Image 1 (spheres, rainbow, N blue to C red):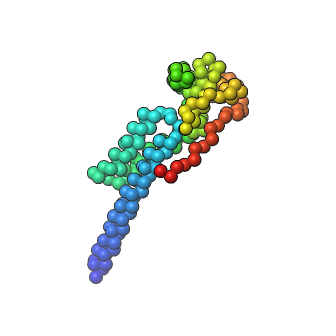
Image 2: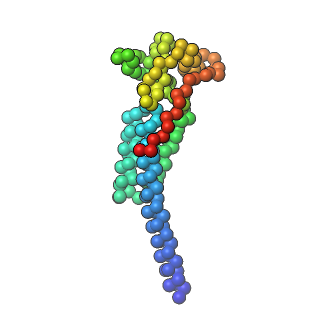
Length: 174
């Protein structure tokens, strides 16, 4: 009788684990869908790297030969990398298209606060906005962006800045 009750208990635990694994699979799919939407709606930085990560995670959750624990590990690792972008400041060189031409700029991204482009001569600056792309900033705001880039690049004394911030885009129901 003790052996039978132990078998019944083990079967119950096994069934419970299978249910949890099935629920985990659904949660991972939902998480990767949300992750994909976040990357699509976010600031346009490291686009190729982030799209490769999205593709990798979509393939991961669709891979029926991969064990659930590995799927979970990969999804959590991808989320950790993405969340880290909100905590770092990045400055790099590139070009933007303005007034039909290419403009050499320094991109400045303070976390997810905004994406700014500063002309290499420091005379003009732009802020990226979801609906319209890069919008040129007023002279006073350009100076703030220039000072902030100088400060972050450690070419000037640290000071408080008043970076202009784009208004958040309302979430759509699509």
